[in-house]
Structures are given as C-alpha cells and as structure tokens.
Length: 366
Ligand SMILES: C[S@@+](CC[C@H](N)C(=O)[O-])C[C@H]1O[C@@H](n2cnc3c(N)ncnc32)[C@H](O)[C@@H]1O
Picture 1 (cartoon, rainbow, N blue to C red):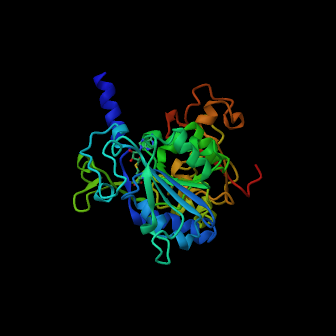
Picture 2: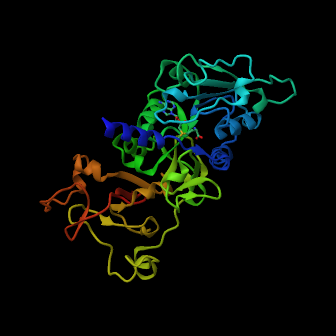
Picture 3: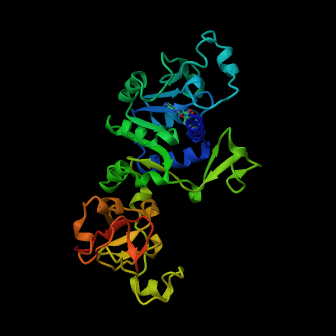
C-alpha cells in the first residue's frame, strides 16, 4: 500500500509541468505560418490547464483576433483531485470575484471562455475572458469535458505525462485536430506508433534546440543539469510536440550524403572508416545508428533511432514499422529466414541493439 502511494505521488509529480510562453509561441507560430487560416473560425479547447496563469490561455487569448478564432475554452483540474500535496491558495483574481465560492475553489475545476469583446474596448484579448466553476473536477475523461472536446475543432495542451496515451486516444476517438506535448518515449507506445506510422499524427515543429523548459513546484528535487536554480526551471531533452496539424518543417527534406561519402567523411566514428554499414543478423536491413548518417542512395530497409521521427518528411521516407511490429509478426519480409534466435530487437554479431524504426527512401523501388 505504502509503495502504491509512493508510486502515485511520483506519477502525480510528473504531471505538474508548466509550459513556457515562448515555447508555445514558437510551436503555434509554425502552424500559423504554414497556414494563416489554420485557426480561423475555429473553437480551440485548452484542457488540463490552469487558466488563471497558464501560458496557453494567455497566448491564445492575446492572439485571438490575429488567429481569427471563433471561441477559446480553457479548463482546469480541481486541486483536491490532484494526487499531489500543495499549499493551494485561491488567487486574488478568484477571491475578489462575486462568484467566488470557498466550497468550490479546490473541489471543482474552472472553465474560462473567450468569444467576444466583453470590456467594450474594441479588441478581444485576455481581459475579455469569462469564467465560472465547472460542475465537476475538470477531469478530461468526464462527460462535462468530453462535451467541450466535442464542441471544439482543435485541442491544445501539455497533458499530464502519466496519462499521455489515454489523452491522445481521447482526442483521436473524437477525430479532432490537436497539438500536445509528450515524452519522446511515447513514440514507442504501440497505439501511438501505429498512428505515426500511418501519418495520421506526427511530431510538431519542436522546442528550440530540442530543449524543453518547464516550471514545476518540484523543481528543486531534480539534479543539477536538469534544475536551473537561476531560472527555477527544469530542462528536458526527451520531450516533444505531437500533432496532426501541418507545419513547414515536416516537408523539408533531410540533406544526406551517399553511403560512400558517409563511410569516408561521417562525423561519427561508428561510421567513418568502415567498409560498409552493419547489417542485422536477424533483419534484412542495415543499421543506421544516427539519423544524419542515413545514406541518400541506399535502396533497402534501414533501422534508425526513434529520434528520426523528429526529422521525418513523408515526401522523403516511408515508415515500415518498428521492432515491436516485427516481433508481432507484422513485417515477415524483414526477418532473416536463417535466423533462429529472438526477433525482439535487431542483433548485430549476436549483440542486442537499441530500439529502431525501419524506413526506406520513398524513391526506392522496394
Ligand atoms: C503537465 S501539466 C500542464 C499544465 C498546463 N497545460 C501547462 O502546460 O502549463 C498537466 C496538468 O493536468 C492536470 N491533470 C492531471 N490529471 C488530470 C485529469 N485527469 N484531467 C485533467 N487534468 C489533469 C495536472 O494536475 C496538471 O495541472
């Protein structure tokens, strides 16, 4: 029981990461630049938020007119429902409002909406947000929030990390457009990879230089290198955006060298100076341990790291599957018929390798 509580507390701590304004701005601008009408006339829902101070709510409220939004809806999750202890205090914004209710402040979620110029100052912005308590706690799985999801065209948020898979499926079952933050490991989840493989979803534009900074009440519990005492933020390199909105970077082809040039000039010591790329013992494919070492002229199947997806353009490559798919028997043509051992991962000289995604060039005839 004690162990269970500890695990729950740890999980809940991993859910409390607050996104920086400029990271949201950088990401959302990529969709807007690619298609200036992407948000026009749309209802955007920001669930799992804390609208009083969330940067998602601020950013979309401030850009309401520029984006041509029809309606912005933002909801929060009740403090009492969170599995983390906090010294919760309602904000002055809330306590000074006539509808403040001390029985509801921690027990109920809140909803903020923006659709018109409430203040009458001729513009629609953060000052025009209207709010009230939700009937329930704001759990995204509740009927109340499901109804808001169904009303929305696009769902955007940084969902609780521990519920990422459920959250993504919650969006997909309603067939909505979305932009959400998640851990890169989620790529390997069976259901998530199936969507990536079929180009139903893809990775977003991305954090600056791959560094994602978050505010968290538990920042000090992280080691130096992750926690920055000057900014009070934590930095992660394994976090990315997932989406099904198009953006320009997705259509940029990766500049690559030929196999011969890679073997001569690659910056990676694992490639430079070798006679050839390694072939797996058990798969009919070559091992490419770095995305920038993908040979431009290799026609066959290549095993690449999962971080390849961050550089993936559907015009340049086809994704065939993952180790997991091979293990499931989905890609029998990739398995070396002479191999008698496991097919849980790629093996080279009988040594088990990292998890890989199998790709080929689109132009290849195979
Ligand atoms: C990763 S934080 C992100 C908060 C905010 N969207 C941001 O990016 O700054 C996820 C939030 O979802 C809340 N949450 C946890 N479980 C939830 C649930 N079942 N339904 C709705 N929200 C939940 C957490 O308490 C936390 O406030």
